[in-house]
Length: 162
Image (spheres, rainbow, N blue to C red):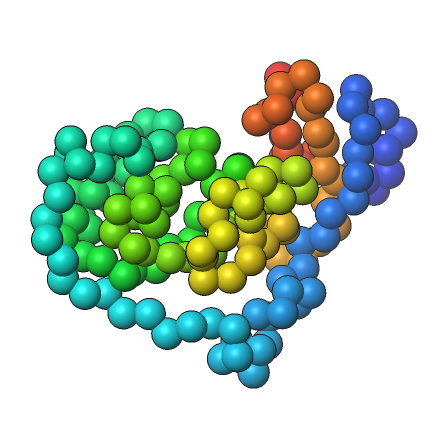
């Protein structure tokens, strides 16, 4: 019913359907997981200073500094970054990938941004996953705002100001 109402009230920008179905990803079954997920381990490494990591910091609100306080002195760890954008801009994991040899999984819903993330971060654990992350399986509608490149999203959970 809600989707029917949304479809009748045409959004101001084009919509495309996206699925929130983790079962479609190759890593969704336990047998597939064991074949693609490499084993990683964290090792102690020399502590770094803020000056050393500054060139690779990209977080929007200094989230990478908070994580740096926790993980400084550890190398070879793993992460998941949801909302990876292009893998560099506003990335909370970029500094750990470049400075501490962490590797991880980047998830980005915007097709163009996921493609850029794949180019910008080729040495991750797996290819960038172009998908939505949801608590349950459902079909959603992707909205792309051509005037504001980083302001895109899912129609059903968008800000009313969008």
